[in-house]
Amino acid sequence: MDTIRKIKIDIIEGRYKAISAYKIPKDPDNWYNCPNCNLKPLVWEFDNGRSTACGCGENLYHHFSIKADSIMDIFRRDWDFSKYDSDQLRGNWNNWVGLEIDRQVKCGEILVSSE
Ligand SMILES: [Zn+2]
Image 1 (cartoon, rainbow, N blue to C red):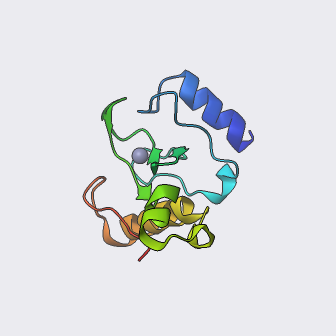
Image 2 (cartoon, protein in one colour):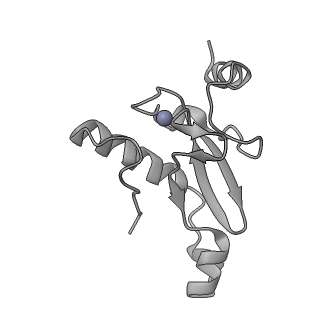
């Protein structure tokens, strides 16, 4: 089964703890599966934030999330949109999954920054 189809089924079956603003990433095959719930993350990217949602957490509004700098964070800090890394959220997520596997860290205990 292809990845997007599997994610859609997981969404329909209610496995994700995510409001509908979270969408399937453009390149889901390049995102690792969560080591705790085994789902690919959904992503919410807007001007003031970027974050992930998977099946980990209590409910739609209180769930585990990996974050990345938003375009407004970059603009406020550097005044330079060329420093915006559109792939940073995926990098942070995959880093976190790698750490989780290496160190057996429990879901939600750490947030990975790209810096
Ligand atoms: Zn998870």
